[in-house]
Each structure stands twice: as structure tokens, then as C-alpha cells.
Image 1: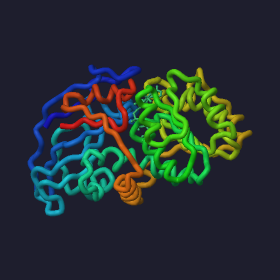
Image 2: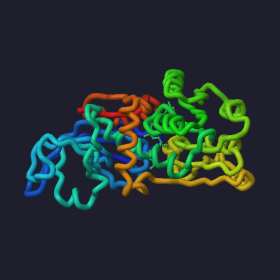
Image 3: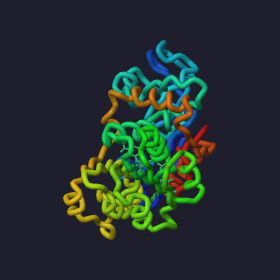
Length: 334
Ligand code: NDP
């Protein structure tokens, strides 16, 4: 097996030298075990956070869609595809313990017919469910609500845009290039802006004169500091991610020292602000995925993947997330 290990702690934006590629001999496939080969590996923004926590020289944490290539477990015959969380590795031995202890971390793909298996780490996996439960369960959108989402051309954001449209909302979206803006318009968003070339405040004043009812935040920092002033009274803010701050040393702050928001805006507008981690909905995992699959098959949910080929490209694909290189889900295919 080939594995990518964390060679040193990233400082600021991660660099290629922060990771090291090594060979590893897998243990034999024992009774109840399977050996799987990676098909599609995920790079996700949260890995930046993990890189602060995991011991140096650990295999980088991450999810992949893999295919069983050797099996001594009748439940998982050769050729079966599954999703597991054993990290940046080409081959993995999964034991009965992995299947017992980590039902969400080692799980079957949802029934997906001819759809690409790589969706198991994208729209039909963790990012899709993040959009689904984060928007629907936390924010409970009603037809006619105005929904704001940033990172709108990314894996989570592009799904939020479309689910909000399915629910009859007006959607205001922000993304980081004109190409991304064009795609998010195609997805049905009503007002789409390139945050790199537009004043966020001016854009929101024009697009949401009566205020925003739901803000699904993927970006945090200064964007959020500005957006909160455009919320309608009793609005809901779902804090999903804060990618604009992940490379800062003070990552625990939603708003940076330079862009700090004042609590008073939360009080005077009587906002409900809630952070969430998707694993809160672990016991409803396939409810979300099955609904998303049905919407894809009905033509209501579209997706894109930015695919990089080759396991050796894992670090560069990961770093690319912080440079906005991906449209839709960033995927590394073997
Ligand atoms: P994306 O597919 O959206 O990829 C990351 C994108 O973020 C980039 O393409 C880039 O797009 C944008 N970005 C990068 N740096 C900045 C910056 N400084 N300011 C603004 N935008 C930036 O990733 P995901 O869809 O997987 O994740 C989106 C967010 O959701 C992340 O914050 C992630 O941590 C969070 N998340 C949270 C989960 C939870 O359980 N709470 C689960 C999954 C994801 P652009 O060109 O538009 O700048």
C-alpha cells in the first residue's frame, strides 16, 4: 500500500513538503477481514483542522470509496464498493471490528444505479448530507425565505443552493470566480456574486432589501461579519464551515480580529446561530442520501466533480481547496 503521512504541521496554507509518501506492507487478510483498493479519495477542508491534531507521521485522515479486492467476509464479497475513513491510502485492510465499531466510518454506498461511485464521497456522501441536514433540519426553510450561501460552487454549497431552490426559496450565492458564478446561476440561484470582485455589503443590500432569513455559512471570517448585518429579524445562521480562517493560527474564531462582529447584531436582530457537525445526523444517514439520490435521478440536483488523477496528487489536490481550484467536489481518482 502507498500512504501519505503528515510530515510536519502546516503553517498557514499547507505546502507539499508537509506530507510524505511512503510504502506500507498490509497485514494479511484474516478471517472476517477484507482488503480494499481505493477508487476515489476525498480531499476536504476539515483536513486542515485535523492536521493540527493528529500526531506527526500519522496517515492523513480522510474518506474514500474503495473496492473489495480480497475478502474473508461473506457480507463484503470481492467487487463490492464501500466508503471508509482510514485515510490517504491506496490499499487498506478492514477488520470485523472496523465494520462493528464504525458503522458510519465504514459503510455501504447508497443504492445509486449507474451514477458514478465517486459520488459516495460527494453529493451521495458526507458533503451532500451536510447540505441536506444542515439546511433542512437546522434552518427549516419555508417557501419564500431568502437563503444566503457562500462557497456556493463547492461540494456542500452547490447542494445547498439547489435544495433551497427545491424548497421554493430565493437564493443569494457567492463564489470565487466568474466561471463558478456562471455554474451556480445554472443551478438556479437567483442572485450570484463573485466575492473577489464585488462588495459583499453592496451586493446583499441590493439582493436582499428585506433581509436574509437563512444564512448557510461555509466561509466565516469577514464574510460572516458583513453578512450578519443583512439578516432579517429572527433569522437563522447555520455555521457549517469557516474555510477563510482555517489557515490562521487562531482558527477557533468565527470572525477574525480584523473582521470581528459585534454580539449586538445577534441580539438586536434576535438571530438563532448554531454550529453543527454532520455526524449529529449519523442515525439518519441514509434518509438524506436516498432523498438526494432521488433528486439527482429526477434531474433536480446537479453536480460537478473536479477530478485529479493519481494518488501522488493527494497533497496538491488538498492544497487546491484553499486556492479555489475545485468546482463542485474535489476528488482524487486512482
Ligand atoms: P468546497 O468544495 O467548497 O471547497 C473549498 C472552496 O472554498 C474552494 O473551492 C474555494 O472556493 C472556497 N475558499 C477557499 N478559501 C477561501 C477563502 N479564504 N474565502 C472564501 N472562500 C474560500 O469544500 P466543501 O464543500 O467540502 O466544504 C465547504 C465548507 O463546509 C468548509 O468550510 C468545510 O469545512 C465545511 N464542512 C462542514 C461540515 C460540518 O459537518 N460542519 C461537513 C463538511 C464540510 P471559491 O473559489 O468560491 O473561493
